Image (cartoon, rainbow, N blue to C red; front, side):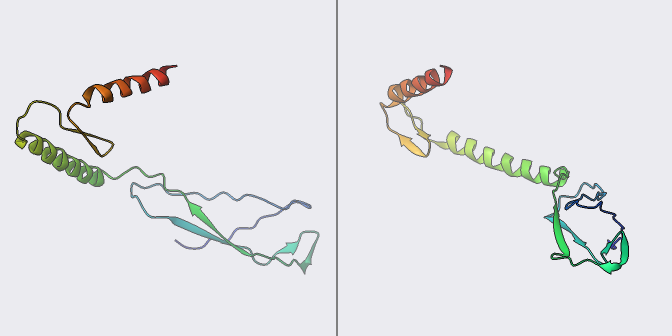
Length: 131
């Protein structure tokens, strides 16, 4: 996009000011977008013949992306999750049928006979949260 010239008049003794930038919304999820601001030709308002020294004449502002997630991405995400769920269900359906428990909790295999201990521990944790 093209640069725009803007004249800003800053009242005496004011050290900061804000400028408004109009953003054009779209439905594209971009990576980080930035804008550059450059201050040039600064003059004292009461004496335009005198120039002003500016220590830092340029600045970069980051534009936060507020665009919605594109529908195409949602479709791919949904298909990926669907494939993973189907694979997990099929794996469980192929598992040998045995009595007892085969489970993982927080990545750890639970051994047969631990069912009661795990259930009691979970109930105790829930009871502590309710207090």
